[in-house]
Length: 546
Image (tube, rainbow, N blue to C red; front, side):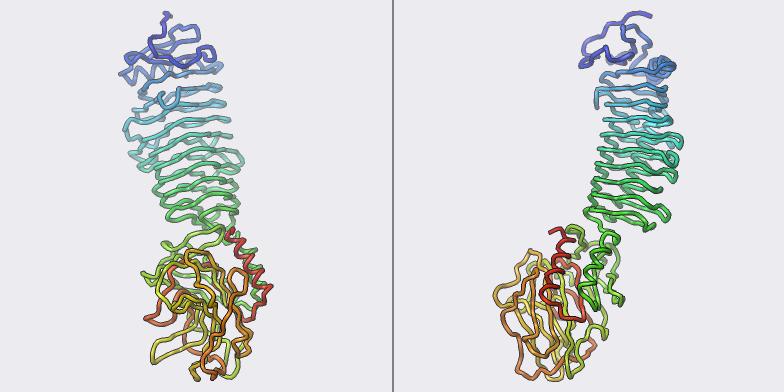
């Protein structure tokens, strides 16, 4: 072997002693030398076959028996075929300035047992591969860190940024950037066998068809502290069970997570979701805790049971858990589902673990529930006790406006029973109506307008006494009513009408709509006392993390 001195800048910034082999280029020739600068191989930098030959001799052949450490200096190294790392081989580059460009129809780099790949960039130079991987792992205990992979595409099958085989165990992927794996493509595909462990931590996966995919044999693996964004199909598709998805940021994906039926016992905790579709869980038996942007029903069953216990004879409770469609499910035992006037996909949002619907006055958004005797609390002779409530954050809109009501004020065909609303001066009222006698009783909060752009938990209670004194209005657990709201004294009792229950408007074609966010509307057939109102407020605001 001849001796070749390093030339200007070709090996800058590296210490030679820690490595067994050095690969570098002067722009014309690619060299591989041993620790004593003896040339192992050399080839034209412009010839991808020659460059691959240098890598093969310096890595695949030279490291075949004992493995070792290889440093690749800055440069663009085009290779026509896969570079296979024998067991115990460790490749280190100079970051994004060390570029391996796989221009052939093959994998880029393949790793055997206990290998590592660190601090370099792998791309395909615009060549559409056929079902190939930039990095393919077929050995156990492999570590990949600080590697950038981008621009892969597939002419047939899938392109992969990183993928492992079903026999590869304990893969570790740390702080990598994987971008634009398309055609279709998968950022990271994990296929190892049942009971093995993979960790993907601190990575950025962006602009792929699928961000991270777990095959059906995978379990006990972890995706943590990653940002997965701009994926065109699914950001995460764990087609397996028993995995941990924690502390990740899902952003601007067509769908953040897809879970097929049978894929269970996956744990999702402390993640941020904001995809067009957040989580589609067809298996049900997965665990969700403290995520932002997605609330699973399993997370709120305990607080919901506490709320239902406080409400007692609850007639309707809408926790707004739906994030698509127009059905808003009732979680009382009565099944009085609401119907949103528009698909809630474009309306929902989250505050803490509570889902809100942002209802737009200009678009006439509302949630309607059909007429039912469960919502009537009088028979024309006497009234029964009841309470209603809703969390509201409203903006500027036209007044008067219904917040929660069973009240059709259409001229000539009035069907009025009760209303929680805002009057023309933006003052809060809760009252009942006697349609036969055209009279009403109730209370109002005359002291201040209901502030806009602020969360208010509003509860109206009535003891059924047939007097205004029997009404109370609470905001955020504190009684605020300060004025009777009553007609001419002819009130006897409310009557059963055909009006439906309306959220964010009255039941009439020309009624004003409330513009704003609503959470957890309810109706219950009891007068909530001050302590119950307080408990209820604390529980709901606990869900809202306020």
